[in-house]
Image (spheres, one colour):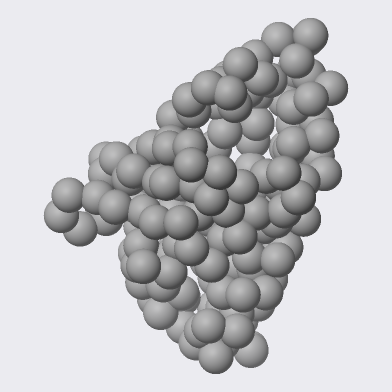
Length: 151
């Protein structure tokens, strides 16, 4: 029982520049959410973002969650696993995001893949609304904002 979606976008500059942008926590508030899905107010971590980092994320609705870096290949790939708190954890068991960067004629191709696991069959319809409708729209908006900021 998975909800999965991917987005592809292009951004100017090199994959290394895009990777540095992704790891710059001051840029994370560019994720503004969509509808009732909250955006990010701030993200903090002790030290630099690297493999194993546990990033504290404060959201626009006042909630807090953590994102653990599970894959860290500078200029190529970045994968996180979100540690969810209530109320989201009542509906979702986990959310993972994988970002793959490749060189393209126009700069960098960014492929983002999300895998969401509903807590149960009972919560799956709510999880689908979140992961099948709201999150893809928020990510599309975020992709456009990242491309503009990298320009």
